[in-house]
Length: 343
Image 1 (cartoon, rainbow, N blue to C red):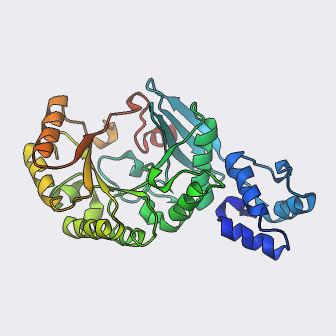
Image 2: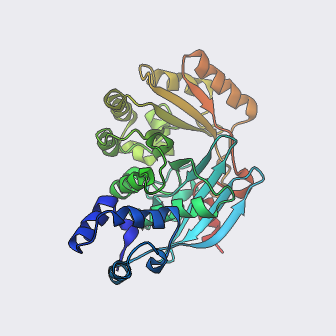
């Protein structure tokens, strides 16, 4: 039977209408599922017994199981969740004094094989459907230590724009008042640079945040780090980003993972400032690379990182340096799943 979490609010209203039931019940059902974490239609006590039976006869409420949990000294929690087909996905709760960010996955594995990321080491298996993505959010909301979520980032395993329809439909439910009620501006999609997806996203009329995994300022280095650059090279990517900013009047964040001996020198900083020139609504988020033994990469030293950041500031680039979180629990994408599956 179909997972009811794969229905949007309007879809559910349509089903209720076909059953000659009030569409008002759709909001009640959403509240039970997404606000109260109901996993059984019988628990929905403000619905008639007849409606509950119809729901049980036609739908299931999917769930995930915890395979492993790690907790960092800084409060970051990482959850490895088992889906109903036994595949595994990761999600992370990242608390600060001002917010609690949930980082969720969009695919089981990843096909894009970025050199600095452990997500693709086990290969790509499949897309997550809408209900599975929402189950990650539900799990974070009700099982993390903070018991709260203020922000959602699609920066876990997988490429969100390669699973466009499921990710966007999940985002709309995350945004619904009757579900998670997380504002669009508190939801971020991170992409390695899928240009058709960026263009499509610009027409969605959603005030979500867009983050581009850039990581290099010339095609040779970027293609070595992100093979997707061979299909969507820098010139075309920056052009698509410029069009996105003009069309949406929204800022783009360019993520730049600093890797020792690869992209962290002063010439790299100057090239980066040059290609971003003219993108007024843009900023750079510098991220020291996570050490991943299987990938043979290391972050630069602290001084080199600060010199790189200072060079960008002097060249007029809006730049921030991401504080590392969860380093002691391998909180980077794919690391927990990779270690678990190697057992």
